[in-house]
Amino acid sequence: MSTTTTPTILTIAGSDTYGGAGLQIDLKTIHHLGGYALSATTALTSQNSTGVKDVFSVPSEVVERQLNVLLEDIQVDAVKIGMLANKDIIEVLVKTIDKFQLKNIVLDTVLVSSSGKDLLESNAINMMKEELFPRVDLITPNIPEVHSLLRNTSYTGKKEEVQSTAKQFFDLGVNAVLLKGGHAQKTDSVIDYLIERPDSISTHTTKRVETTHTHGTGCLLSSAIATNLALGHTLEKSVFLSKEFIYNSLYDSSRLNLNYTRENKRRKEPIF
Image 1 (cartoon, rainbow, N blue to C red):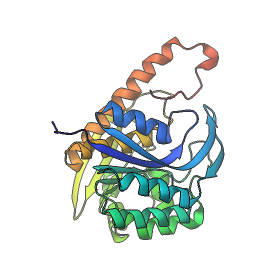
Image 2 (image 1 turned 90 degrees about the vertical axis):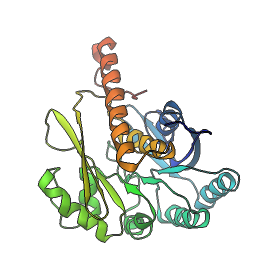
Image 3 (image 1 turned 180 degrees about the vertical axis):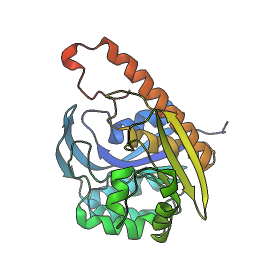
């Protein structure tokens, strides 16, 4: 889809020293797909191929200054939100969304790193649900995040569970939810379900890629969706295109694994 100007996508997320997730993978994804990436840093992390070792939250007033400086100067076409760290940063973000009337907002509900490090303080989860969920256009939880965000749910990624699970999110004010299936029981396919209000459900399926290159896949998918929204695609088409993009990225990275030495095969390498 052609546009007269390069679309701008703002990513609000934590920094990954390893380069495979967070701001770094967002920037790579946005530029690869034809957008111009702006960024505001919410946290600094110390991490490598074995996981997150340490997290330092950026002071909320610094996050607010980053956002104000950018948004007072540049028209933003879409926003990807990742790691938020704490309640103070969420409060800043809520105020910013309202002040600048931001649109095409994709919230990747990052709670815990793949290595088990908390990336959002537990007392901030309710605030995210109450204040951010109604303000964004899409949330993209994986199955463990669904369990953390919803009470009394046994969601496992099965089609018959989708409608009732989506209703619980809609009751929290969510406008649309992409229930990701990467953590579902191992099958030949990964099935994600996009549910938009009031009851529109679309199924997005790709072949499962057997690879260790899974670091940052949630960041990549959400930033790709935001970029495709900024390019003018519908939400359903944006999810479709982004699923294709992440499959191709994983497939290509998996082929690179063939050249690794036996000692390095178990490392989780960045996708790009």
